[in-house]
Amino acid sequence: MYKPLVPYGPVRLLGAYPQRQEGFFMQRIPFLGGRITPTQLRRIVELAEEFTGGTPLHITTRQDIELHNIAEADVAGVQAALAEIGISTFGACGDFVRNITVCPCCGFDPEAVEMTPLAEQVRDAVLSAAGTLDLPRKFKISFTGCGGTGARPYLQDLGFAAQSPESIRVIGAGSLGPRPQPGIVLYESIRPEEAAPLVFAALEVFAEHGDRENRRTARLRHIRQRMGNVPFKALLNDAFERHKARLPQKPVPLSFGQAGYQKRLTLQTLGGDITCKQAMMLANLADGQTVQMRINLWHGIDLYSRVPFNLPPSLHPLTHRPRIVACPGNSTCTRGLADCRAAAEVMAETLAQRGKTDLTVGISGCPNNCALSVVCDVGLVGRVKTMDGVRQEAFDVYTGGGSGGDERLAQRKDTVAAADLKNYFAQS
Image (cartoon, rainbow, N blue to C red; front, side):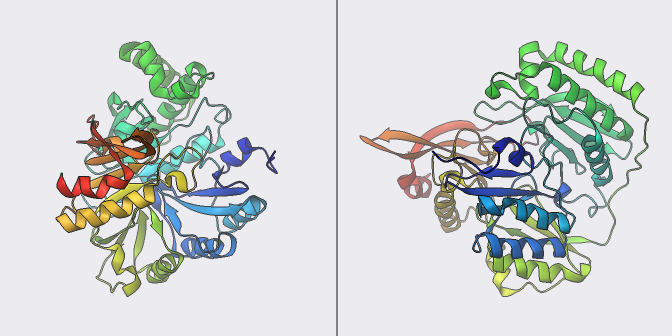
């Protein structure tokens, strides 16, 4: 029987997961707010070429980059190499506070509040606190500066949405998974300096009341569902008041984004994959700070600059594409039931032929909804089903989601065999 070299628990906390292929791992690399430098991207490409045989980089929907097909014996070496350029993978996976997301326009849009300093304060506070390693399951936080919806606050354990530099609306206790549930408004307005105490209050409630026996019901929103909204909010508020009294209130002056920068392009990957050659070209383009890169929340990279620039020809295929989000599916994930990458290619071709490039499509390889399928315009959720007497890969089709910016969940419309996706969407 295969035995791992190291226990999976500690490895997961450092951002690594075993793949479907025995002896190989995925390494997740978090970037707070999607802020990645040319030096960091270039080094990640070098590691992909050295340790994965040039497997494409995978951009996630939480502003991470994943390396796939790393041999188990090389995982520690990859993590050490990342640490040398200032990247910690701690908490990228496992039962911990996951990568904190920030809508990518923050800092550039003069009409959006720059939330990154507050996100950094919260991250640093969580990393320095005792007790945050003993959570029932993962915990997700986002910060939105542009109108309250950009970083999908309704899908978070805590979503902070700026109303002004002095006032933040808090939405929380939501999540996806097999039975998704959008969050609720927890506070109409808090001050920026109250964000960290509220995070600690929520973590306390989560640690004390979360389900440690059944991981399927172990998120913060399950506590809310068991208790009811009113008792849950009262419990959270009691903890919030205690932590406000306990913690020094550190002012976090927030401001609107700087004028001058414009989003020139979005490089939209197909299902999150960008080749090593393309990623190296992008790093070279952004070198010298002429172009600023932000990993967005939809498998893409937004490019900002003060002046227009010429895009290398090898990156042209990543422009003007439909927004198709897809998890790795059964190509590498141990839970994957369907081939999401193949489905992404079919959807991209079909939507382009029909001129429907303004849709957001989410393709998940299993009911866990890792690709946000139930909040997209069109969602595909993988399964295995007997159809026409044949056991085969299939997708449940969902439509009408609100992208996590409001309470709308997509509704199930149909089930389609994977082999029939092209015909189905060519006619619908």
